[in-house]
Length: 239
Image (tube, rainbow, N blue to C red; front, side):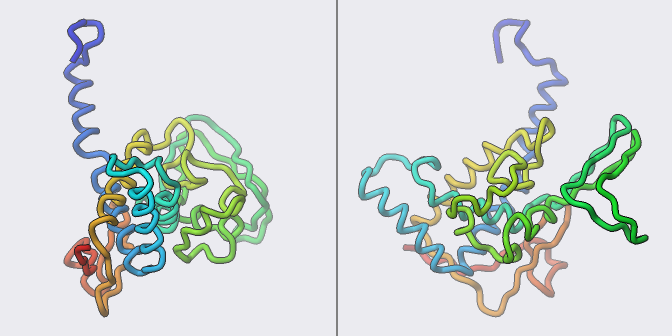
């Protein structure tokens, strides 16, 4: 709210920013955090490893505030979740001009023709699968359908290609149209996770299967209870 008229936002700009601050990133970050806690509940060894790292930091640094960048161990668990369960599964892009998109490797069409590029006409809409890239075997190895944080601790294992703005993931898109708030989302996820993991233990709820259901974003829903909307039943124990 600058006193200099030249630097003040117009009413239209102010309303646009208000929308961004109050809506954008709310469901995406909240659902991602739900998935992180769910996966940690399903993987107690990984959860214990993260908690031990936080405890070790406390011992060596005292009671000062912990920041997400203070230790690397917090990153694999959120990064693994962003890869395994990207909250946005695909993006739509409209071509501004005629173009030819080269393919990383030849593929066969449904008619059996082998092609090495795809022609796109101006105004044509292209659907890109973020979920698909995040689970490509040639990128992530022979276990892309497994939540495995260790892949982000092994040098070279997740760097066979370089896309996106974070962790070689497509989850935040890429280029000039990548998610404008991705850094804030990562800091928020790490900060909340560190706080929760110090104070609580997360255990799986018995006889419950949680499914990723595309509903605007990929929301966690209990199998057989999709009509009840998003929910992540887990047992939480105070430490």
